[in-house]
Image (cartoon, rainbow, N blue to C red; front, top):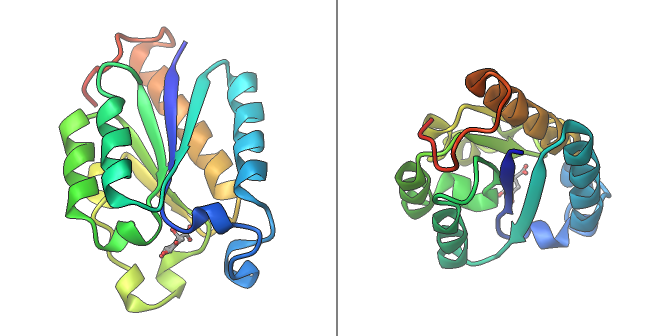
Length: 158
Ligand code: DQA
């Protein structure tokens, strides 16, 4: 069974309250529950982590080494600023899908650059909470295709 880590960056703990015109009304708990439902249907396991702290997010990414098969991440504002998160992702060398609730490219120009995107399989941006669901499906599909449907050894390089 593929084991996946879902990571939510800063301020995503406030989903539901935070700028609902941009990020919708679902809470982080709602999103995680929906992801768990999809993961169960797809036959994969998921662990969830959220932090507002860059270092804690780096620690979480590092902890996936030899433990997980892939990462689904919404790095929040650190998308646009964090060399440290990008370095951690490069270090663990796992397949990563980057997701965003809002469409970054319709927004301020400082949101158009992602330090994570060049390291990701792909990025899904603009579908609200569905971005997470689509991202999870894309990650699992990628892993299944790559392994010929059996779970590979954890930590297999992308
Ligand atoms: C976000 C987009 C980021 O620019 C922003 O800083 C966030 C949320 C999104 O999901 O749309 O915190 O990652």
